[in-house]
Image 1 (spheres, rainbow over the protein chains, first blue to last red):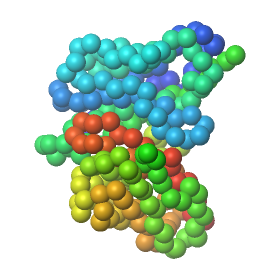
Image 2: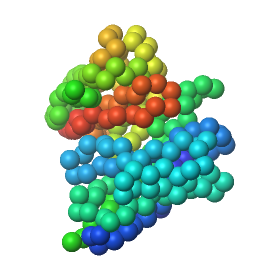
Image 3: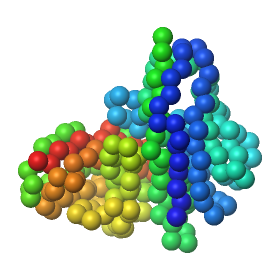
Image 4: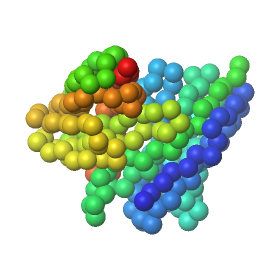
Length: 118
Length: 112
C-alpha cells in the first residue's frame, strides 16, 4: 500500500524568505501523480502544485516549486519570497490512477503547519 | 461557476440520528469523492464515484452510504450517527483518471 510521510509537523519562516517542506512516499508503481495542497484557516483545500511521475522536469507555479526525486521517492515543496498569506497547513498527496484495482484516490500525508512571521 | 459546494456547512447531531450531506458541482466532473479529515491524520477516502449511477468504497466506508443519481450531485448519508463520526467532511471532484481533484469548502459535523 502506498504511504505518504511528512516529517515536519510545524515550520516557521520569516516573510520574504524561502522555506522547503519535505515529503516522502512509498510505492512500487511507476506511473502516478503527486500534489501539494494548501489548507488555510478557512479550511478550504487549495491545489498548490501537481507533478506527473513520468515527467523529469520539476513543476513550478509562480513562487512555488518542487524538487521531485523519483528514485529517492521524495517530493519537497519550496516556497520562495514567503508571504503572510502562505500561512497554512500544507498536505502532500499521492495518486495512482484507476486501473489494476486502484481508485484514483488521493493518499494524504499528515500535513505540515507553516507559519510565516512578519 | 460555483465549483464544488457542500451543504450544510456545520451540523450537530445526537448519537443515533441520521443525516445526509450534499455535494454539488457545476464543473462537469466525472469522478466525485467523499473524504473525512481528523486531527493529525490528513484526509481519508470514505466513498467515491466514477460516474453517474456508480459508487464504490474507499478506505473508511463503515457507517456511511452514498448515492449519485445525478452527475452533478454526490450524497453522503449517515444512517445512525456515532461520536466517532465527528469530523470535517470534504467532497471533491475531478475530470477523470489522473486529473486534479478540486475540493468543496467542507462540512463540520459534531456527533454528541
